[in-house]
Image: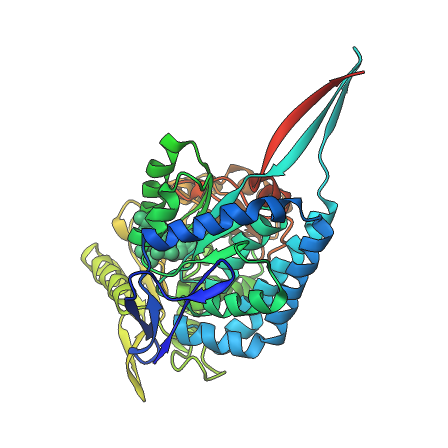
Length: 479
Ligand code: TXE
């Protein structure tokens, strides 16, 4: 069985413990590879390598750093098919989705920051009294990057590309549930000629490797995407050490559908925002709020189309939903469907584990639509992170906003209306970091990305990420 390696100081190596964790293929429920069960000892070695590599990498001209990162982007593109299959095998998502979204986006992340760094300029402030200030934006040092399992290479590269472009070195940890494409990336980094120690990838559990990264005194900056509970734990560790912190956490995003929307567009996109990637995207809309006059028509059409969505073998191109990432996560999602019924919800379609012929042990769930629940129940307040959405109706704009904002999360939201004034009015009042009007998940990498409230702290994307991964220093000169 294939054994993955850590990537430390330019070498592919076994963990110090020499022990391994089973890696499951969620579409079959079978173990198919082994992941290093690394611990603090490996993180210490990786951090020492990253610390040693920092002076040379941060002094490398941006154009040279850019060249190497562009080479990595090119290698990702050349290996698109292999990487997409690997991502699907590890995560359960349809291969076509990984080919169309995950892997091209990973290449774009490197491409974007490799070129952005060439345009990264800093500010200067002249004072009338004969002084001039300029801001030096210097790389911070060793950046700790911890990423989740839902968009494995996409989110892993979203962190390490700007960190490296800005001149930091990195100690990173992909999710232990989906480590494969990060491992394949380490092979590509070697091919691309990334100097040893610049990027280190340590595989293993969050409570061992992740905790060792967040508490390491020589890692002054942490970028994390994952669950809100884990984010709170990381913040507790990092705060007394005064680390720079960027946290992208959970969501419970509303889709606000006004009666004057373009019905067909709203339905089509809502299907996507509900069930893309099996609903395992922090940006998925999981609470669909529909203006009363449209409620029944919208509900009936959504349910009709949801019931027709094909769930199954992720390598089948006609499949819309693949497998849920792990047995544990499948059980969590199913327990929320159970809870929704106890709370008085009515299942309009789906609601069960799906047994797929030939893949009987795989972790599949039927796309599920639920109605009849009040906003203040757990089903409508907590992140489920699976193919489950609830429907609620509202009568006024104020009520829509009140429902939309009545949660601890504030990551994203969509607004559907043909009334421009109303769209802007509602967008301004939604307490979320990202709003889409009459669309969903349209991503321009220049825009600020992140959430409010329990959805996170800080923004990444565009200049925001380059600002986060650098330390501003003001230099004041008398002339
Ligand atoms: O995430 P974890 P889990 C949400 C979603 C999901 C819930 C829990 O609701 O059901 O979080 O998922 C590492 N110190 N999202 O438990 O554990 C871990 O190894 C440092 C939303 O799988 O947060 C992995 O690499 N690191 C989300 C990463 O954190 C630790 C995507 C994320 O895993 C750690 C995923 C620790 N103590 C889940 N413990 C999104 N925002 O997109 C774990 N990790």
